[in-house]
Amino acid sequence: MAKILTVDNLEKSYSSGSKQLKVLQDISFNVEEKETFAIVGPSGSGKTTLLGLCAGLDRPDSGEISICGTHLNPLDEDERAVLRNRKVGFVFQDFQLLPTLTALENVSVPLELQGERNASGAAKALLEKVGLGDRLHHYPSQLSGGEQQRVAVARAFSNRPSILFADEPTGNLDAETGEKVEQLLFELNRELGTTLVIVTHDMELAQKTQKILRLKGGKIIAKDISAT
Picture 1 (cartoon, helix red, strand yellow):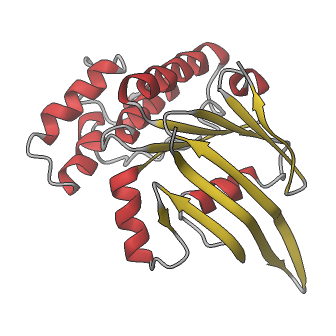
Picture 2 (cartoon, helix red, strand yellow):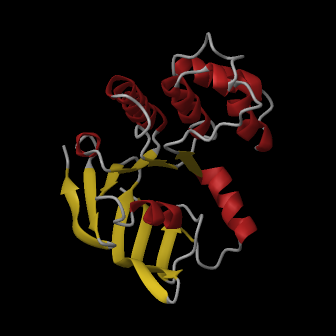
């Protein structure tokens, strides 16, 4: 199977006062097409920083990242944005829905930006798929946390991404609601053939993926562990 995400010798530091804080050190791994992959580790281990680098939202100090065969380092910010719009989906812990748009509009907007002629119809179909067919015209403030995250999942899959990054997707949800959102992510991953990369501190969620990468103190302590 083809590799969809390749990370080679990644290093990342941040300035903290007069000191340089090394957040990631010598990180290398691959993720294959259609794979489900978890990045786990305690708080402060560099998980979210690594996810941002893999998605091209930030740049490493050194090392190489490629998504779908495209190397990120040579790309400028506009080129990275184009690549993300075409190939990448995101689900965040805090939903990040636009508060002034309805559920339907939140999912329609990315489709409209891509030139989808029937954006509203496609968005409606996705919301029905995640069980929100009766909440299309509700605003985020009128939806529960679980419903908001389901809207976010529908939006993330709206451009049929090749790879989806989920950062603690169930972190703000109760156990029962979180499990429903997890099921949705895995169902849509299978149905649409999207590679799923999940950052989580929840080992129960990580165990549902095919492979696990463990981080501690910005270093890999174990990788390519078969989780299933």
